[in-house]
Every structure is written in structure tokens, then in C-alpha cells.
Length: 429
Image 1 (tube, rainbow, N blue to C red):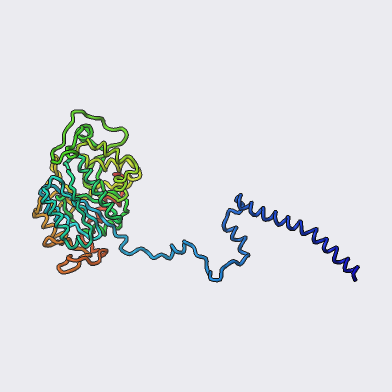
Image 2 (tube, rainbow, N blue to C red; image 1 turned 135 degrees about the horizontal axis):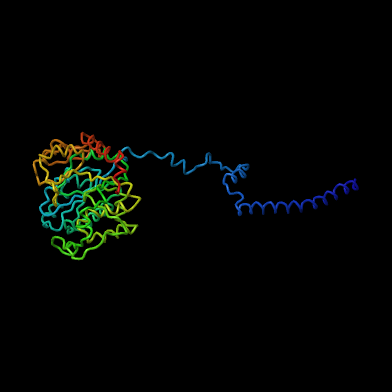
């Protein structure tokens, strides 16, 4: 038995010693190769790694299903119903003697979803500017919503000078600081007036791409090349505290070759993206053109047009229309024709949201209030947001829109200038 035991036991021990060492070496080599494969990218796919280790049941006791970030996104609630309604940001400007008609225009334009900047320039008496501030601060709706802002440190604005462009950019910067939710910037003066309700405008614009820029423009300078592009002027509003006309310089300059000049209307509806581009200036072009137009006569009619049409990113968003009805005398004079009741038919037939220019408290404004806006007794223009007694003395649901006949007119306008072949045919040419 011992011989047998020795025969069985001793050789077995020797055999284990023979194959144990190679087994250990092989295991180390396998581990080395596996680690190397991770380092050199042989197992580059997470799916492959998962398949390798899936044979090991490593799930914890309290884990039932894997959690991925994508599942959190897919289960997020949809945006609120009113989110698709655009917001507008208005600049309403005036000068000496414009307090009352600026106030009238502001109330006719008001909607709780919008933002407003109002400005009486430095030529206005301090008493008028103070009265404007008092009216805003004492209006319960304005105080409640806080969406009407006054430029308290008034700017000097010279007609036809670059100070008007500077004032517009100032208002844009204020609006960008005050709110992150508006979609279009619209500049108006105290002599402008709406022809449709804000519910009509918001309803119509809710179906439009928010990158559109409503800006009348053309590169056909014609007589403007010799009378505006080549002369040099100095705007005293840049350094004087009293308003005077621009100063002319005898030296003339050639038309630029680094960029192409465009001209058009000083009244615009600009997208937020384009406004940010002009204000923040991550590209140097807006600043370069601002310096160029400092010595350009009637720069408000060329600065924004030249910027947008020299940037391919924005040139394709330009709608060749200023959203205004403006009547010019024949031959055209320095200022447009002052609108009266006799122009009512042409104004309403134009399907545009705004018209200019009007005299203060002219009878045609009362007619617009009664027949187009439904505005009475100096109150706000009625809309779906209006609540309280009397109507519009309180704010109800600000996202509730009640579009009227004006919305149908605006739809016809958009069909003509946006939803037609004219949109691309008239861009930056």
C-alpha cells in the first residue's frame, strides 16, 4: 500500500509542479494582453466592453434598470402653450413738444408680453422728461409688469446725424439687458401710430421665422451717391448740449471698396440675433461701419442696411420692407407727407402695421382708434390680456390673443413680402 501510495502520490505532486508554473505564466500574459488591448484601442467600443463583462452578474441589489440622460430628456414636459408667441421690443422716441403724442403712441402699442424703451431727447425740456417719468411710475399696469423703461439720461439726437444711430443702439443695449425673451426690435417715433392691434401683430409674427429682419434696402444709390456717400459731415450732437444742424466739410471721399453701401428706410423690425450682432460686435464690421457712418449724412438710412447686407449670415434674412405706410410728395421733399383723414383708405389698404407721420392729436388718429384699434378714452388698445373694470385696467392672461381684421391684413402682407418669390429676389440687391 505504501508503495502504491508512493507511486500515486509522489508522481502527482511532481506533475502539479510541472503544469502550475506554465499556468501562472499564461495567466499573466493574458492579463498583460488584455490591458494592452485597452491601451492601444483594440477594444474601442463600449458595446464590446459591455459584452465582455456581461457574463458577470454585477447588478446591485437595488438597481433594476439602467438610467441614461437621454431618458430624462425624453420625459421632460413640453414647453408651455404660450411659448410660441413672440415678444416685441419697441423703441419710441420723441423730441421737444412730443410728450403727449409719445404717450399716446405708447399706450396704443402696449402689450404685457412686450418690452418698451421710451426716450425724449436732450432738446426736450427737463419738465417734459420728468413728466414722462412720472406718468410711467404712476401707471399701475406699467408698475405691475415693469416692462416700460425710460432712458433717464437723455441723449442729444440730431436729425440726419449719426447720433440717431447711436441712440438706437443704446436702446437696443438697454433692451438686451432688461429682457432675454424678446424676438424682434422695432423703432418708432412719437409721430408714428399703429394701424393694427398688438394681438394682430403677435398672432401674425408667431408663424414667421424669428430670424427675419424687416429692413427696406437697396444698393442703387442714385443721387444719394453724390449727395450722401461722398460728402463729409460732422454731427454737433456728438459734442454739444444744444441741437444744431450738421456741419458740412469741404473735403469729399470716394465710395468705399472694402464693403458695399446700401440705403433705405430708418424704420425697421430687426431680429434679436441681428441686434446682438450689432451691439456686441464679435465681428469688427459693425464697429468699422459705425465709424464710417459717423461722417455720413442721413446715416440712420444706411448703417443697418449696410451691416446686414455685407454679412452673408444675415443677408439671407433681410425682408425688403419697413412695415410702414409712408406717403412722399412728388417730387419727394426732405420730410414725408403728413397723413390726414384723406389718407385713411390708402393706409388701411396697404395692410401694414404702422404709419407715419401724423400731427399731434390729429382727427385721423381718433378715426384709427375707433375703426381699427377699438381704443377708447385714451386707454390701452384692447386685447386678449385685458381684464378689470374698466376694461384693460388689469392684466388677465397675457398669452391669450384675440386677433381681428388686422391679422388678416398682416397675413396678406406677409404673403406678399415673405411667402413669395419676391422675398429672395429683393434681398441685398
